[in-house]
Amino acid sequence: MATGNISHSTSAPDQETLKPRIDLATMFRLGLFQMGLGIMSLLTLGVLNRVMIEELRVPALIAAGAIAMHQFVSPTRIWFGQMSDSKPLWGHHRSGYVWIGAALFTAISFIAVQIVWQLGSSLKATGWSPTTYLWAGVLALAFGVYGLALSLSSTPFAALLVDVSDEDNRPKLVSIVWSMLMVGIIVGAIISSGLLKQITLDTPIEQLQASVNRLFVIVPAIVLVLCGIATVGVEKKYSRFGTRSNIGDRDDQIGLGEALRVLTASRQTGIFFTFLLVMSISLFMQDAVMEPYGGEVFGMPISETTQLNAFFGMGTLMGIAATGFLVVPRLGKQNTTKLGCICAAVCLGLIILAGFTEKPEMLMGSLLLYGLASGIITTGAISLMLDLTAAETAGTFIGAWGLAQAIARGLSTVSGGAVLDVGRFLFGTPVLSYALVFATQAAGMILAVFLLRRVNIHEFRQNAKDAIAAVMAGELD
Image (cartoon, rainbow, N blue to C red; front, side, top):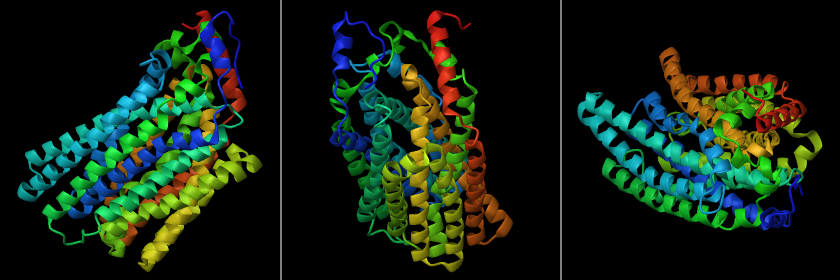
């Protein structure tokens, strides 16, 4: 256990040096929070995206752009992370922020659905009139607020993972917690499919509206409960936040300006930020188009296209579980991530091929393999991300890495819709239009491999250590 150099004259630090190592059961309990996020992502990127594009006939770029607003507010992640470092709520640095954010994003999700119905109604009645554009803007605003709440909750949670773990058990924690994210996607797909099973391609809009509204009441309530179960009591029992640096150098003494200086002290921060950006865009660009792909090219109803997420989730779950315990110890974090990127590019080729066969079974199998590659990438990249994090400013660094991933998710959602619209203009046939999206992703994966070769953990750690010492000495201007 890393305890740092602390004075034994104060009782709080002494108590923190005696805190136990996190056990396996608590790791799985923390994973319930990620499970909830997985369920919520299925609702927004799966169900709502499909409803807008396929059922309400909203153009893919506009639908994806509105949803992506929850990612474009991601610069606040750095601020929320630094706040959780320096301003505890209810005696905790992380948990209070997690709870407030979860309560907000689960409530706002239902509000967003009601705006979607207004957008669809206006589009049907008046076409793309000023009123319709207004509703599209209101929807984008709602998703922006949703993103703020998500950042407020998820960034301190990721910092909590750093606080409660040590370097030797962190890969195991990452594997378990992010496996639960995929479990959430699978569970969300099953619940959504069950609640929407009566919906067909020609279901009246009133019946669709009632079913989706019910879904967005039941599922967010479940997610909020999962969040509470996951985090209550964990920080108090296991967090080593107060012992990761000298008591006089605690991060609550470092303001946002100083934290940003530490953040930008190493060129490795920029290199890894760029890698995360390119890799995440390439990995998730299909999120905005996969359900419409299943509906338009394969003729699948909405209850079946939501199940596509389950195949991707199962593959990712297997990939994460195997990678954290078997692959990373043998290949290392960096080589594991490279392997995942290459495998993902190959699997995207299989997804393209499935479109030409028009066989849903081949699409499902390809998504299972793509999920497996995604699991390899996720475990390797997140393990690298937590290594590239200075303990004294964990929240700030986690905010930065979260910023890269969130910007990428937003760009991937918008670019997926945009590339699909370009494909429709260029080719006219649905299968080639969607193929252009997947081919663009594959090219991005290869670019990510070249960026990853430049990442150097040792250089990052030395530069961050020097920067923190300079900040605390008042030597940085």
